[in-house]
Image (cartoon, rainbow, N blue to C red; front, side, top):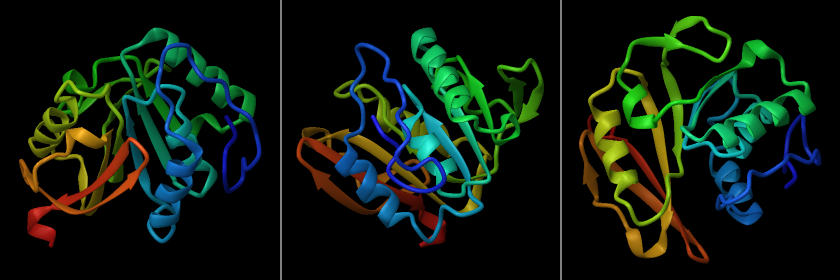
Length: 193
């Protein structure tokens, strides 16, 4: 898989076995939608897999990306991808933990053994396994956290038949986009609309 835009454009990253990567068309559309928000943003990539979305965000000027995935093989591939691209270590942290377990902790040990506060984030992208209510539960979990900036946007990548409610926790759906079997659903805190 290739990075589509920005500093690392055209560079190839590895994919872990057994995951469902976000398609190039969906990634390209996502970052076209986010083009005015990504520069200087704090980016949270939940259920990150290979890290393609967070790496794309860094490539396009995000100030920091936090990657979270509970699969050791995915985290190993992610680390290899970041090393291959020579992404500066200060631009990211990696957490090999369950997303729901880690979200609401104020600080936790990163892959470098440092304990840091989590957030604030301008953009959160979550791409959990399909058809397990994990996207909805993650949005509910995010609602209880104090890790988002006031104008943060949260994007859930889900299966087209898995459409999420208009309101989940503190979030209200702003819009959605369909790409084949994939939906990207955009949320904002209801108080910010």
